[in-house]
Amino acid sequence: MDPSAVRYAETHEWVAVDGDVATVGISDFAVRELNDVTYLELPAVGQQVKAGDSVGVIESVKAASDIYTPVSGEIVEVNQPVSENFDALADDPFGAGWLFRVRMSNPEEVDRLMDRAAYDEHCRRQQQ
Image (cartoon, rainbow, N blue to C red):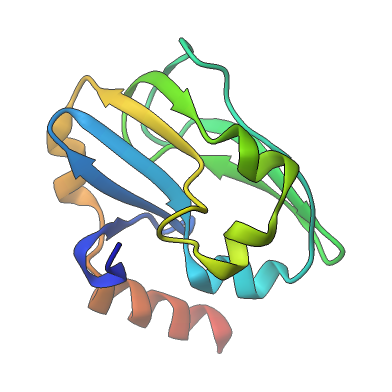
């Protein structure tokens, strides 16, 4: 997946939309900042979520961070293999490293997320 074709939350999750389903992952920037991931907790399939809800946890040797859903709806799939082998998070964060899929109840929420240029600027400001 092309990182410029997805939308981004301020909390470093990305969203790619296919119909009414949003695939969610964490950005390449977030993966680099976390460094060596040691633990990943994903949401439960069937869970109802609202945009901004904490739905999981990712831990590394440096920090622990919540994972938030950028869109509302129902969790319809999780990427279980990535929770057992973290390599895909660093090697292919916009492909094999996706985390979960949400059947969106309010697709307009995607329009509130940042494009890649705005997200890159957001990351630059965080590093200052």
